[in-house]
Amino acid sequence: MGGDDAPAIVIRGANQAAGRHAAPRFLFFGDQDAVRPLLAQAPALAGRADIVHAETVIAGDAKPGWALRRGRRSSMGLAIQAVKEGRADAVVSAGNTGALMAMAKYSLGMLPGISRPAIAAILPSRRGAIVCLDLGANIECDANNLVDFAVMGALFAQTVLGRADPTVGLLTAGPFAQEDRDVVQDAARVLARADRQIAFHGFIEGHDIMAGTVDVVVSDGFTGNVALKMAEGSLRLYAGWLRESLSTSWRGRFGYGLARGALRAMRTRIDPRRYNGAMLLGLNGTVVKSHGGIDSFGFAKALDVAIEMHSGNVNHRIIDALDRLHESSQPQREPAPIA
Image 1 (cartoon, helix red, strand yellow):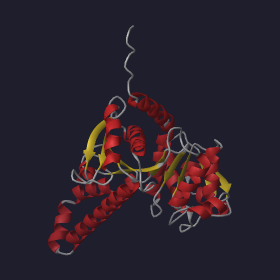
Image 2: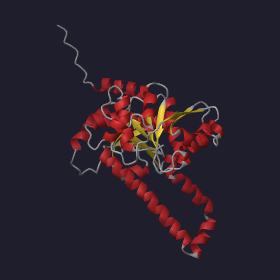
Image 3: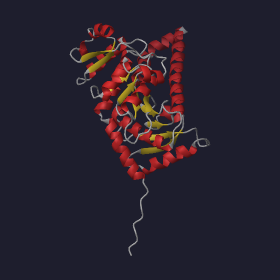
Image 4: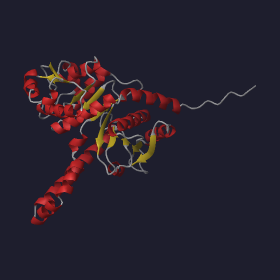
């Protein structure tokens, strides 16, 4: 029931995703009187969908604390509970981000060895899609958090982007930045020693994100959120400038006619809907956050992410990878001298 045009975009998006994935069934949590007629118009969901009625909805401006106290019987709360109880394998919501994070962390808990969840999302770059995390769940992080994010991001890139050996970079403000350098340096030392588990590229800067220097960009949540909003704003700015340039004169309109095919291909490539679906990594369950203002095409992409994360068994792989990483990062003991 979350999102600017819910539940219509949710049902239509699920209908599109169902056409691409034959196996999954879909549980819709919300007002059954609003959902049922929409399902009747979704042929790909016929025989593959059930409705779980929820009388309340978490408002977009609700505080996470309020959601924890009052939202357990809401559509969001019931959906998360279904994952906890094993009645669902993943939850996808376009609702309140803070409430989703708080309720999912409280109900599902964390994976063993993970102390904090991270928001991971896909962004476009010159070399193709990349993964960035954390994008706002943790304002401050220590070295262990950054190492955890690197492992989770690499497995996300393997599963969702199909990268066989994704490279990982730690985002910094440049070689002369001193603040929090100890944290980043400590994380880098651990990742450098774990070359069998992580293809660690080293330190990167802001311009490396869009250049696609690495497959996985790791940072604290404050830095990552600023970088994400800057990237989104830049894409909208240049897209707007392009539209203005092609529509304000007859030369522009004529040029558009000649380059229509190339411009359509570019628009498709940078379409933010194609990258919808932020994963809440580190939780003991698959939780995907869709943008609240997305349409059905974008919501279907978020469902794709959830389906791929579950089918790729990502959470179990994260646990195994962290165990191996911690073993390899332990200092080796010198053999005892022979008497």
